[in-house]
Amino acid sequence: MTDEEEQLRQYHLAAHQALDQLVARWAFCTGRLFSQATIMELIKWSHQQTIQPTTEPARPWIQPSAGD
Image (cartoon, rainbow, N blue to C red; front, side):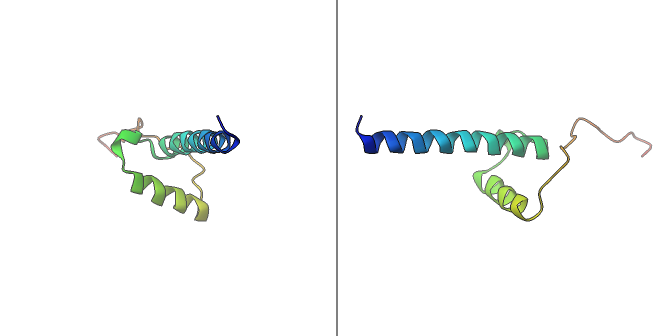
């Protein structure tokens, strides 16, 4: 592997790790599976996080009771 190829490999490894972290954060904050979203939704959500970050996790497992 040439030096240039190794640099590109390292770049892609770092980008892949950052994408994994972004998708994990998206799932934590939205409560949705990534398979339920589009790349554009992820990009828009990520941009919104630069303006106003989400601090609380989504709680999709908490459903309001029938009387609420």
